[in-house]
Length: 159
Image (cartoon, rainbow, N blue to C red; front, side, top):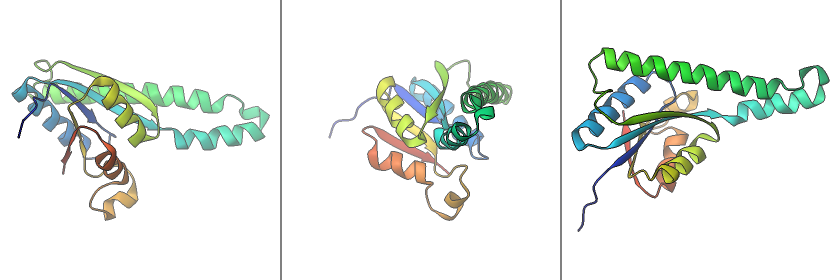
């Protein structure tokens, strides 16, 4: 059996109550193994598809969906900066780990898998459960399960 080094990690976060722990574990892991880290948040496009559908029927709402997506991306970028700052203040090795963050729009599990491939990730780290209320009743959240089933690299869940 051969073992491959883990050099690049993608950590998917959703800003749920589980996000700080998930991201903390990702930073500690990356520091220990010298891996680079891409922190990813995906804005679920399904919310905006509904806005787009409604705005198509009401001319006064034209362009609302595009504005809402842009505002959400800005808000998530601010949340990411704040979260990374808070983790750094708590003593996590934020400065010691090569990392970048990215906000993407799309179907969460699809974008996670696409960006893991694009980034050349050897490992995806994510929370086992997320924002969706239904996921609280399940062992894994639906996004986590879809990533697990379709990923071509290793996947680590944080509970």
